[in-house]
Image (tube, rainbow, N blue to C red; front, side, top):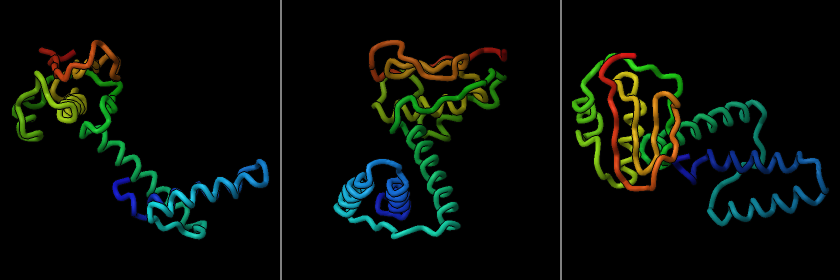
Length: 173
């Protein structure tokens, strides 16, 4: 959620408060927990709706879910969440474009290996994974973690080192 003071967070908190009221436990539990949640929210200066109307609730929660998905994708692609981008079920194909010229055009750099600051290295690594099939990249390693096209996920393969490397297949599989 990009705007912590925006309506999304307030709506999410309202949902938590509504869930606490529906929680089947000790009668004092919802009131005690609700006061704690409201106190923390008020300290942050956020606005919490009194209640959500049922039709509004459905579309609002759907929008909130999309916002959270977009935030997670952005965090993965920018390097804010290291190794968060995974791509499963990819197959090597003949490169549809030149890797270095595409990186230069889209990332502003042609330096796709060697030492990089952590956030920049993860951003480049995530970009390589996202473009793996079309650019015939079958392995990316950064900061001691390796993504392979075969597994589609990241795994720890060495100590953290801020070093980026990648392997580009020479022929389609």
